[in-house]
Length: 71
Image 1 (cartoon, rainbow, N blue to C red):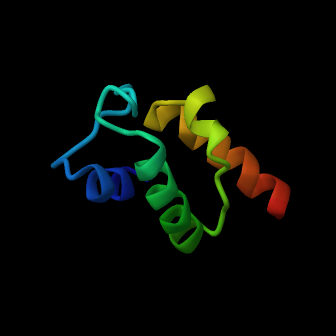
Image 2 (spheres, rainbow, N blue to C red; image 1 turned 135 degrees about the vertical axis):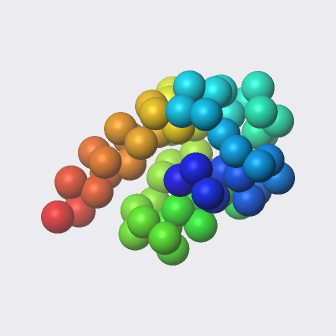
């Protein structure tokens, strides 16, 4: 996920606790990140998850939960 965030937000690195929106994220970047996460992680992340879990650490928990549901 970190790699995808860095690509889309055009940042060299993103810390686990940095807020997506503070890094310049918005609805357009969310719509670019979600399909990449689906391709790379096999999980569709709903856009509202970024509001509920705006850090990599929090979103990783959401993604892990979504992956476990798919198994």
